[in-house]
Length: 186
Image (cartoon, rainbow, N blue to C red; front, side):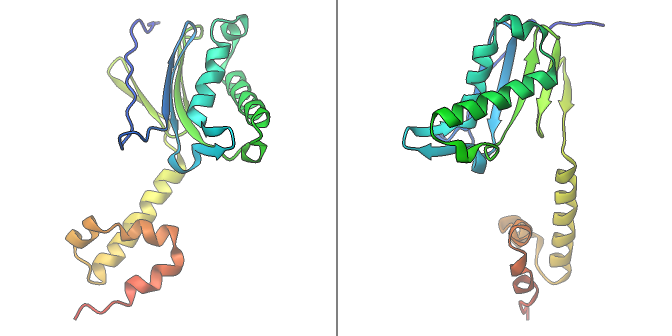
């Protein structure tokens, strides 16, 4: 069955009011939701704040409706967006950030009638969730489970661990590992 997307709904809201690293674009050839990776999604320059999601949607906006967009496959699209980001950052004196800003995204190509997922994101199409999980996420979850189980065995309560994300702290600061296991629960 070859279905076409006929209606696209969009809304963009961040987890915290006024702190949204996302952007949405709906055009003739593409529809895209771009989600900036919080700690790597924006930079402050002398020209003001730059958000990677906005740079990417600007790239798509410039491509949309052109003859190039008509035949562009996923790999060529990604190459174009990466080229555009590099050019944009060089033009704004921020070349030190080339390759350091990150975003994930869901892009619909009308011409290819395909949904493209970049990074660990998901989309819902015709009631079905389309995913692109990263293997590292599974590894991260496994490590957290092992740390939580070890903390429970060493005397921490489930309630305490729900309120205090110690496993995340240990993963990001492994040098603190012994601090958590040397506590006396008497």
